[in-house]
Image 1 (tube, rainbow, N blue to C red):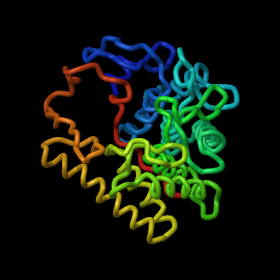
Image 2 (image 1 turned 90 degrees about the vertical axis):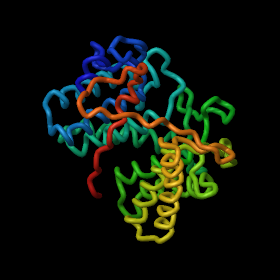
Image 3 (image 1 turned 180 degrees about the vertical axis):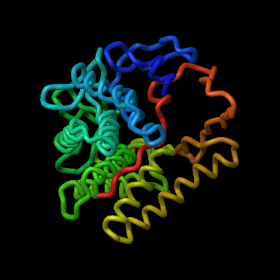
Image 4 (image 1 turned 135 degrees about the horizontal axis):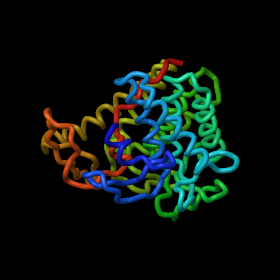
Length: 308
């Protein structure tokens, strides 16, 4: 965190996108996705460091700067400072996650207010009121962009991830949040799992768009299924959780045999591996291999969530 704060933090309280391995600035854009992960990291590291005053100060400073520079009238945030649109659901999802993480460790009511706002934006704009599916890309008026828009999709992994986060927010039986979460999970499970693996993307009508698969949607499927199984006691969620664990194991098994970590399985079942990295036990110096994106610098363990 010292390296990150020392080299990524801007004078206005927001964070740069990319620096070189030696800390020299490479990309000075301000992207909502990165700010959300910065907030999440600042909350998460307090599980190890405790309620460190300087970490709390940086979190509040970032929240204030974000609302001053990127907040939109009526709620939600621009995607970037320089290029505000199109508006994106994915960085809002991580902003929601970060706000929930801060709410769990801080009595500051502004964190709960931020979580409430992002949740409301998701329910009002991101999730289609007819199909129950959550899309990725929206115009400046929060209207969903066409299927042909580059990057537009129904991502099974994000249906699972939003379902889990909404249940972290409110999991009361019979509540609107649980119903929305169950529908998101249903879409991901019934339309986005093929051959036991959660695939990359669907079209708006739930036809397959990209049948390849990556590792992370398998973990989100496992989390959401387990959460719903624990909340409802319904056997089919535990069956899905078992299937998700088996699907995840395919990635881990591929990776073990390839001496690395499998990050994706292609359309024909071929795998692409991430090389296994050496871990130094004597030095905390940053890797000398390449520049480090803000979001990659912050892929830390996510905080535990309070029980409902």
